[in-house]
Length: 226
Image (cartoon, rainbow, N blue to C red; front, side, top):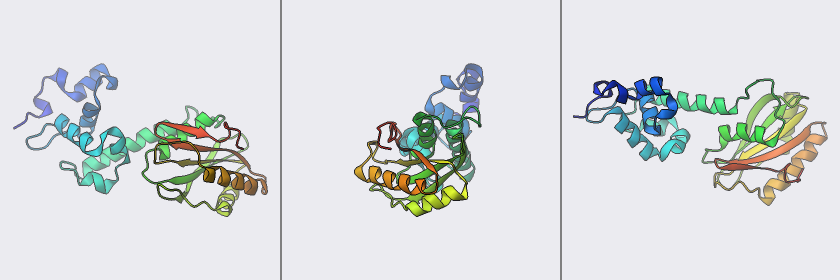
């Protein structure tokens, strides 16, 4: 029978090491072990964490896992699944939150950071909008259209409708490429121009369209396509 983490020397226990040396001193499996709390019969908590990471495909796969998928992993009950999902969501919100909530999304990199935290890891394509005030501060974020790996159907009328609902002065469009290649397609460029025209009719400025993947992003505004 494997020894529990409580039976290890204190300097080797993940929680004690985290508090003593800081979270950066721990491996992915050890950080996950702190969240899991304990192992299972015949398997200590770090071994359980390693097995979970291997089964899910690492941290990225763990972050993209749905509750039902995680619940099927041996050793994970509702309480542990809830802790994992809460920790992952806190990480996403940390990444997407500016240091100052009044900070404007002034550059493509600002919008890209927000969007990558939200949608970069999803296995399906999501088309979303950031609705901004006159100072380009975020009013609302909405995921408007969901598609497949091949693309999403986007309706300009719905984007305009939501912009007016939020009384937005500007909009940043965003979508992910589950393929991992951020290069915009001709369809991406075409819908961007259509949306810019439709929003312009109601005096809402389209600032950018950012395509994101886990590994990077492309700004259509930076490319000069807006």
